[in-house]
Length: 173
Image (cartoon, rainbow, N blue to C red; front, side):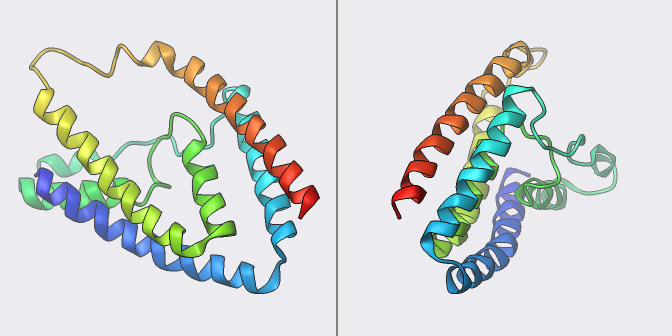
């Protein structure tokens, strides 16, 4: 199942990488660097404010559990991995990932393509490690739930700081 998860996540990452690269190249062709920096500054400010007020943009769902009884483990891993790898279909704790994707698309599209596949691989490795360390009856993630608001506020503060730094850079460009 874990190998299938990796396959599904990489497939979704590649699927997202293609339009991210094409969009980034298109934006580079029509917008000067200063305009792209201002756009990134706006993205940082919007997502930072969302995190500060505890309104991180996300879809309120998890991977479909109904597939557990319908698919064998390998295919289930691929399906879940693909769903997770799409990034837009699952919950997010903070907005940092959205800003990282926007920054890569706006500033270096080739990095955006590689980053989306890298995010998928990293997510799969994280799930694999958590699965290996899992002990029956112990929910390691539940201890993090009370800290989510603090994480969002921290993310928001970082993103607002990045807004300021990016705005200064855009002003000088």
